[in-house]
Image 1 (tube, rainbow, N blue to C red):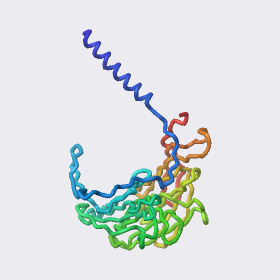
Image 2: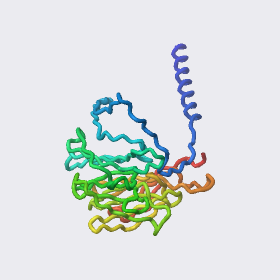
Image 3: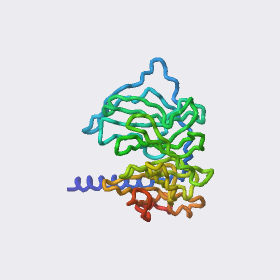
Length: 311
């Protein structure tokens, strides 16, 4: 009995010390403003004996993953997103068709002037891939796009969003919709700036496709404050409703979901207001709102998570 009691006390003591260590090792990270052009890693020139792996198998618990290389294009611009990547679209009505897009640059000049969102497709569930090119098309190296995401219409056409300076505009969020699945004939839908000739145009787009195959766009300005906005695109008329402000943060800190009934949910992180710590009222808090009319109007947001603002 004495040995059992001593063993039990030892176990409890180790557990208590572990909890204490976890508690006192917690650190609050400082607020960081993302510009979208952070310095990226440069891939060195491959040596002659360097081989790009073309296939492989990875085991994870009860799952077996078989992977293949989509393209031999290598990129020094390896930061795909400031949040979680949304770079694959599978047509559920035709699951053999897989669309993917990723951001890359072939010129490590410090400004990544040729940064392009490369569109790649598969007609056999990802067993093999066809590289179609950039979205938007990067003619003769003129143009620059980045921070992309991909979605799809109910009829299978790819919907790509990114921020870019195509057609001689400033760099801002735009929507590109293919004419038919895999046609690689994208139409540009440009919502313009948040304000006329705004010096802080909308960047970092995310989107949702509503039940009528119209597009709900989320985008944000680089400056803090009321920096998060939604916009509604009627695809048939190629018209936008205009940017609607939300009390949210920037750089992809927002995400959409669409229910089978057509309800659109939107979750986002609260804004970061400049100033002393006391002014960060909603910084790090998470809000939820929803739309019952396909993304044209939104209900009053509800705070679903509140971080500790005392630290």
